[in-house]
Amino acid sequence: MLIGSGVGAAIVSDSVTFRGVSSSAGEWGHTKIVVNGRTCRCGGRGCLEAYIGAEGILDRAGVPTRTADWQAELAALVESRSPVITQTVTYLGVGLSNLINLINPERIVIGGWLGLLLGRHLLDDIRAASAESSLPRPYAATSIVLGRLGPDAVAHGAATLVLDEFLNAHPSARIPAPR
Image 1: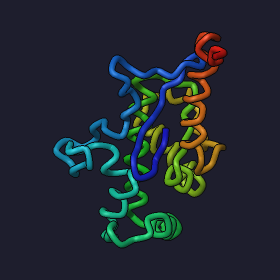
Image 2: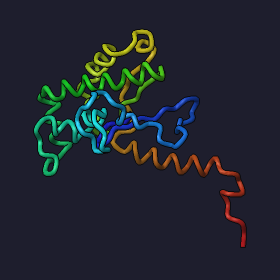
Image 3: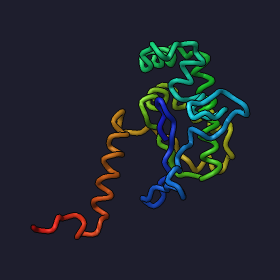
């Protein structure tokens, strides 16, 4: 899963990414966690992203998002253990528990610049918040870890998609025919 300005997830099973019938699987940030909650940038209300995405956290902390250096402001909030960050960990734990209870994953990898920031400082708290809202058996079978690709993980993933398409193409589609 990835947390930054947006929030998303990918489901990978047997080295295959589940894309869904219309290739929109992974819009985890737009699952609803609060009925009639905060307005999300998608136009919906109560989306997870409106609570744990960068803009949602800063807005709840009273930081003007149009002029703020988001990464610096969020780092300061995390360092100060702001009550907004404590709430964010709770919302993140609920969101993770929904994944755990629904798909029973072996591992959840936290990534994205904000996910890594939160995880570096609060991984034990995130795990505890997730355990609190998960069914015990699926939670016990799931590990929650930090991604190791760093802030360039999205770029690596995009490159992988292109390489995957190339490597899995029929050989005649890979090499241009001589002219």
